[in-house]
Image 1 (tube, protein in one colour):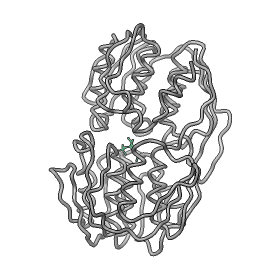
Image 2: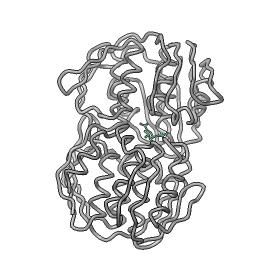
Image 3: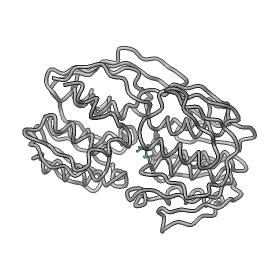
Image 4: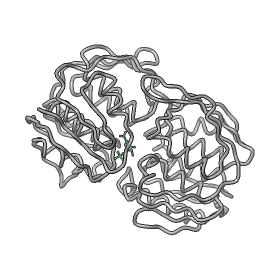
Length: 413
Ligand code: S3P
């Protein structure tokens, strides 16, 4: 039985963007409830290396926007795809010379999805065959009309941030709507940006963005692990306050409700252009669910924890159209299937997802995290319902997004 009231550090996506967009203003911005994860620290350090002043004021972070300068050392993006991809677009738009690097996971991830549109805009760059390290050279950017082959907020954001510094009107169209924080925030901060369905258009900025004060809403991707725990463990009930409820991010909660978990959003409100809410999740028997390519962008980061829920749901859960999972912090389809098989789950691995038949009792196992925070957290939740001991090879990697994960989980028991 798990019981508790939780609030979470700020959403990781909005935290990255808050730091970056505050750097594009000509004033001081105050950010509260910034994500405590290592990824957001990577963004902070990269911005500082580009001459942006950032300091702590008690629990808040203050960013003084201003002119970017060329970093004297390669930018270390750590494990963070968002840091790399958004800063590639942003720094290209600001006419900066920089080299980007990162850890073993990040250097194996595809970056041509960003370099292709930016080079069409005129960016000169070198890469290691489409991967890090990447060097960008100060280039004159011009508008493009880009049809993105993937529904990726990172691609969309990089093109829009490049577009801020490109002559003319830059347009990006994506196949399915991905998280829309970049366009929402840029619009609120005075950028000339318009949204028409799946197409977003931005004009070259003629003045800095407006400085702001923001309290970042709680991270729904972090909340998802605790919501799943509450749904899985009999007699549990967890209340979560101030969770980001932007519809491009709540796919997991919609899926969890469809699976039959007890869920009640008992208050929702808007703050700084984002919907957020208080909700309660409680244990109830779960049913299987089908997830297809249209659903995937709204719950892309939550598919590992959905796989754990699926093992306890009655029926066959099918996840398809999720090939993007293979190029996340690790190959998450392989990581999920390998570890769940070791725990005794009944499943089939697909190129673009998996099929899981449930309910199956899980047994404790040695879990290979592949140094991926979401695999570590998902299998820690699996460990709660497994018979016997579950041992993770590198639990510390949870600190990429949520350093407090194990303490908070422990406090609920
Ligand atoms: C993110 C977008 C998603 C997500 C990642 C964060 C963002 O990646 O998986 O964790 O903040 O823009 P893609 O846009 O590449 O799908």
